[in-house]
Image (cartoon, rainbow over all chains, first blue to last red; front, side, top):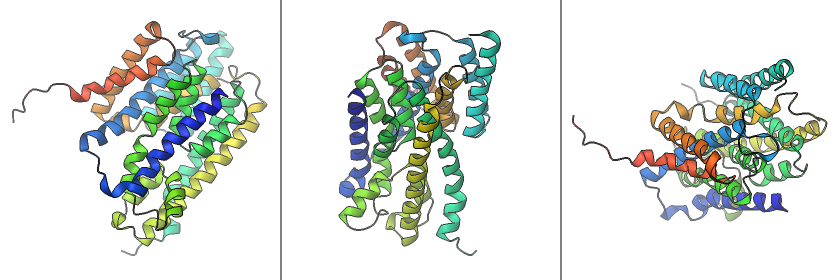
Amino acid sequence: MTWLIVIAGIALGTYVARVAGPVVGARWRLAPRAGELFEIAPVVLLFSVALVATFSGEAGASIGVAPSRLAGVLVGAWLAWRGQGMAVVVIAAAATTAFLRGVLGA
Amino acid sequence: MTSVSVGQTLWREVGPVCVAYALVGLSFGAITVSAGIPGWVAPLMSATVFAGSAQFAAVGIMLGGGGVLAAMVAGWVINARMLAYGLSIRHTLGRGTWRRLVGAHLITDVNTALVLAEPKADSGSERARALFWGAGLSIFVTWNVAVMVGVLVGDGLTDIHALGLDAVLPAILLSLIAKPLRDRRTRACAIGGGVVCLAGLWLLPPGWPVLVSLLGCVWLYRPRPRATQ
């Protein structure tokens, strides 16, 4: 039920955003400042979700550091920053974490 | 210079994107189901929301115990850019109410960029329209099929930790934003927001840390010294 509400809520909001321009758009125009915020706010949010997912603790604890996961994310981040494609980033992050976890057990 | 056909443009520009999205969709399906989320959630979300970054953010927040409201607000903020896209390519979808209502759902970062790269985009040329629908439908089919396959594969995975899959969600998110983060202003906002978010992890209930990270955007409105040229 919870998931149904989340999905319905995001789907509805997203569709309204998508359809507003094509259906009523002619009368609207975005201010340049708003356009900039539209571009930057999602990046800020996604960065924070990445941080939370990196530092979330086990079993619902809000914070915790798993060294092997952190190392995998850092390797992925470095590769992404170097301009590597998503496939390389994903596989390298998972492989680093899995390897270290096998060795360190953390 | 001879003009490039619609098919060639789609093959060259959208083909690689579809390959990448297939992998990301696969991960999305596998991560959600192996984290214990019911198998219908990822496919339903992918068909109705049809926007990868918002889907990952919502799932990430929910898995972190952030709750319905935080997940929805994050999804809305991340997808608010669709409003800007819809405004800029509103003449491209085609004539008729149905075409606009259905086409609107196919608006993505990729086909918007593709249409805006066309010289006569705003006039709604035949070619722009074909590019929009061709790219939109290819991505829609690829994304949804990949997510479903991911759910089926992920269902067989018992230990996501042994495979290091807990590092994949943050890695995908960082990969999605690597390009915009090259912009100095965007980076300043994201880092500011990240600091606020980390502080919030200690001080605030789950869900809030991500939302308060939006405070990082106030950097855009900081008082600036008068330009001295």
